[in-house]
Image 1 (tube, rainbow, N blue to C red):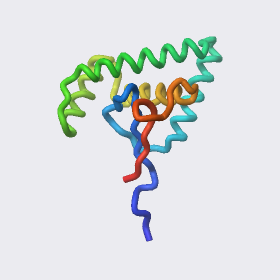
Image 2: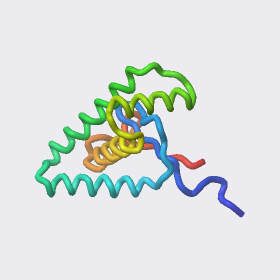
Image 3: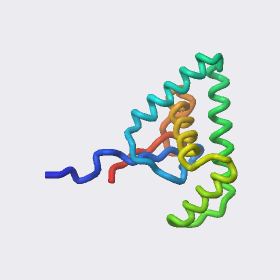
Length: 127
């Protein structure tokens, strides 16, 4: 008998109640490890935890504020338009933007700056 759902969860992350407009299929442990590595690398380069936290929150605040100013439509077309506009606005690919968002959220969770709740953190579900 096969499992009723895919064994790889779909992951969505939130900052100030706003999700990144694209989900990803992966195990959260991968993002947790990458966030831990990012924090350690910052410390090795003499970037204090306070400086890292400030950087992570500034980046997330910038992207979240920009997204909230966009017209909110429904459906996949709206999501594609917002992602395309984000690439232009921030000069990064969708994958880079998503990685930055997800890593920053996971780093702030790891550093206990935010709690995994209805406004911040991650949601994992199976399809």
